[in-house]
Picture (cartoon, helix red, strand yellow):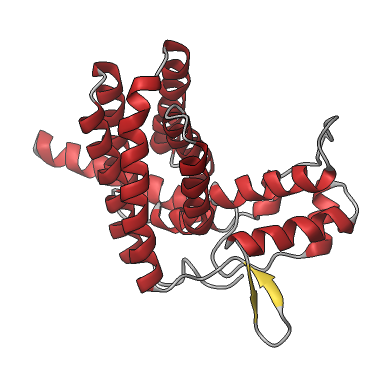
Amino acid sequence: MRIGDIFMREQLKVRSRLERGSAAAMDRDGWSRIGPLALREGQTAQSQVYCTLREALISGYFRPGEEISLRRAAAVLGTSVTPVREALRQLESDGGLEVFGGNRVLRVPVLSPAELLDIRDIRTNLEGFAAEVAIAGMRPSRLRLIENACQLMQRAADAGDADMYLENNWRFHSLIYEAAERPVLMGLIRGMWLRVGPLIRTAVTAPLHFDRSMNSHHAAMAALGRGDGAALREAIICDITDAAQDLAVAPPDAARSA
C-alpha cells in the first residue's frame, strides 16, 4: 500500500472518531454540566439563575426543542422554584425559550430556515462591526485570554469534545467583542447567541466543522496579532457563515425534540 493511501486511511479513522465524539456529546444531558449555585452577596438568586441558564443556552447545553422543567432546574441549581420561575420568564421574553403546545410547556425554540437566515445576516453585521471596533481597545492581557480560549478550542477539536469546544467558542468571541466597549451592541450580540447557541451544537456534527471553524479562529488570532481590524472582521464573518452552512447539512434528527 502506498504511503499516501496509508495516510488517507489514518486521517479517515481520526475524522470518524471525532465525528462519533461530537455525536455522543449531542446525547448528553445538559443539566449534568450545571452545578448548584454558589449564591454571591449583592446579587439576587433570580439574577444568578438567569445568568447561569443564559450562559448554558448560549454554550449549547440544551438542544432545540428540549423541554425545560421548572422543578428540575430548581433541583439542579439548589434553589426554590420562585427565582427559577422568574428567570425562565425573562429568558422567554429574551427569545431564549418559548411556550409550546397545548400543555404550554417551556422549551428551547426550534428556528425555521427563514429565522436562521435572518439571524445569520444580523450576526455577520453586528459581530463583524464589533470585531473591527474592538481592535482599538485590545490589550495584551485580553489577548492572552483570547489565545487561551483558542488553544482550548483546538484541544477540544482534536479530541472531538463538543462541550469544551462550545464553551470556549462563546468565551473566544465574547472576549473579542467586549473589547469594543459598546454595551448596547454587546447586549444585541448576546441576544443573537441566546437564540442560536443550541443550534450551534448541531453544527458540530457536520463533516469538517471543527476544521473550518478553527481555520477562522486562527485567522482571527493572526489578525489580532497584527492589529488588523478588517481582517478580524472577515475572519469572524467567515466563521458565522460557515457555521450557518453546516447547520444546513447537520443530521435531520439533530434538532429533534427531547
